[in-house]
Image 1: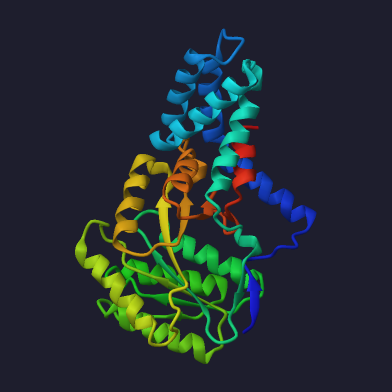
Image 2: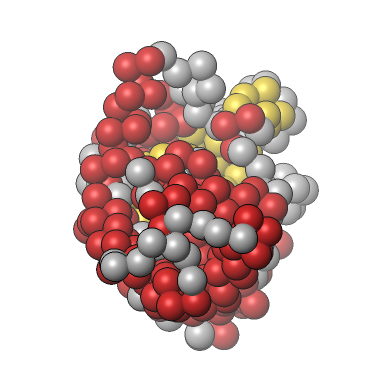
Length: 324
C-alpha cells in the first residue's frame, strides 16, 4: 500500500480519444434534445431578449437541469446581456456553455483525477448506497475494474445481505475483475460483513475496499439506521472509514434522482455521487442540476453497459460535449 491517484492521470492519446467518444455517444440523446430545445428558443430571433430567455428557461427546466439551477443560469445570462447591451442569438450556445461551466466551477468540488490517496496505513474505503435498480452493483464492478486496471489491490464486500441476487451479482463481478469478495450467508448482519471485509482487506494490504449495501427504499428509517451501524463498525478497523459514501443515482429518472439525493443527503453523510444510465436517456441535464444544487460532487458518470463506460466526471468536458 502507498499513495495513488484515482485511476490513471497520464492517459495516452488513444485512451483520451476513446473516453471522449464514449462521452459523446453516451450523451447523444440528451445533446439532441437540448440542442433542439435551444434552437426553438431562438427561432426567428436575432438578439437575446426576454422572450428568448423565457424560452431558454423552459428548455433547461424540461431538460431536467432543475428549476433552481436554471434560474441561476438565466440570471447569469441576463447579466451578460445587461453588460454587453446586445447579444446575438448565434452566440447563445457559446455563452450558455461558458456560464454553466463557470457555475459548476464555483462549487469548488475537486478534480478527482488529481486527488492523491494515502493507503500506507489503511485501505481507501468506499461505501456504496442507493435504491435498488439504479445500477449500484454494476457501478461497483466497473469501479473495481478501473482500480484494478490502475494497478490497485481491491477487495469487495457483499453487505447487501437481504437479496440473494445482490450477493450473486457482486460475486460474479469479483470473478470477472479478479477481486476477492467477502460475503456471508443470506440475511446475515450487513455490519458484520463490512467488519470482516475490512479485516480481510487490511490483512491482504489492499489499496481499496468497496462495500455494497442494501438498496431498499430510501425513505425507510431502518435502512438509514443500518447504514449508520455499518459506518460505526468499520471505524473499529479503520478509524477514517468510510472515506467515501458514494450515492448511485439513475440519471434516466430525472426529477426522481433529485428526490433520492435529498433523502439520502438528509439521512447519511454522502460525499460523492455517481449518476448512471445517461446513455439511454435525454435527461442528462440532471447531472448539471445535481452537481450545482447539492454541493456534493458528481464523481462518476455511467455512459453505457461496457466495463469501461464509467468515467470520472469532468465538468468542462461534459458541458463542452453537451453544447458542442
